[in-house]
Image (cartoon, rainbow, N blue to C red; front, side, top):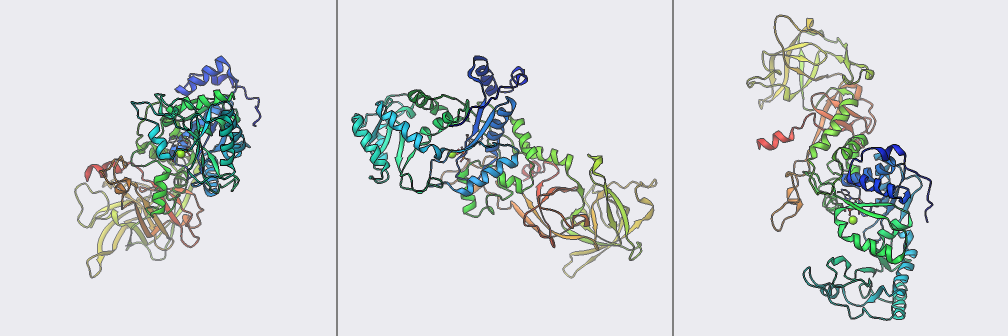
Length: 569
Ligand code: ATP
Ligand code: MG
């Protein structure tokens, strides 16, 4: 059992205006003293996959409430499904919660640690005439449950004696019967308007190895017979879950009441859904197993590990959760809200650097050969304390191919034959001529520069475009991974008959640039470091990065360009 700590709410939290309906309920509990002055929540993942951004909402909510009210939040693994659960998932969940910035301290629990207690409680129900061993197959069991509009039928095994039930249940535990041959059911009401109350199964036979209890058990409690009791054992006060459990609440209450144990209040809220995203561990497992992505931590995945590897900051995810809030109505949140949060955070903290993704070499004909100038560049205009750095400027530079047009369109302010453009932090240059290879592809530009334009505008003409560059001699060769949305449609789960979400996967969600050129300050970057590549977006250093060749992921572009692309196509 868990000890109750002295965790009175800090009085300022109570006085404050509640910011959602859950806080209203908690305030009411504190007022009536239903749980004394305790607020004790929990985050209860099933370790059958990696956590996703939807879980982040639940984590932020549960840990956030505990913090706000000066209470506690437990981490509890709901591990009642031996076939799908693994240690790898337990470890990833722990890592993800810590990374998000939340701390369960020493309160890490496993529902499987309560198996013996749950078994005893099942015996109590049998002894009280409230549970029976049923020999119906699952198919027959379904038939007996009736339909929404008609009551179910009693199982022929419903009136077994307490002695017979005790004997059979013990023998179920002892492994005498094969999987699926018998179940233990709660004896409630086969005519109950709520299907879930029609004699639900509470134990099933499953000869399976469990990641923690090994082969100790061959019967396993159902989720509904585990969750509320685990909450009760841990002295949870508010058991917060998603809306699909609303119709399970009467059963949650029934078990707590009939067992006469501490009775937490279950409260349901709407789960997070995002546009251009699916949100289910099962679907993610499919994407991983069928190689649509490169593992659970692929930066295109809305998993916490994917967001982390792809450069998201914990701060931006927490702010996103706070921003979207909680409600009772299911809705779909625009994914750009999440993208904007990370953009906003990185705008404030990410150093600016110059990187050329698609290099085109230029030679400045009137710049002295062998000369190198050390130009000063500001690291972050949003943060003076970030200081400045040196950019070496020389006769041969790389520009981005996209910043040159042989036949410029109207209002093109970047480089074109005979036109001028400013190089960021440096001079104005003019394109004098182009060199092409046999296939007519431009391989080099010959330019001139105006030595009087370093840090000042010429008075006799207006040069509007500013483009980025790196010097050929000192550039660092880098790999850049440009990620795009994983799905082509706003609601990937909406599909034609016979299809599933996989038909909406974006086949062009990853473009790898093998030989980008980045400025020399990026020569010895560390994994996870984040930058703004000026004019291109925010990038971080991937874990595949090597000293001889850094690898960058695009976290987000500078603006929401997707909206335009979709509209145009
Ligand atoms: P999935 O359907 O993705 O497999 P799940 O609900 O089965 O998710 P659990 O591990 O059982 O995943 O969830 C742990 C906690 O996180 C639960 O309290 C659950 O209600 C909550 N949760 C899961 N998905 C979301 C979501 N999209 N938004 C908010 N909370 C969520
Ligand atoms: Mg689940």
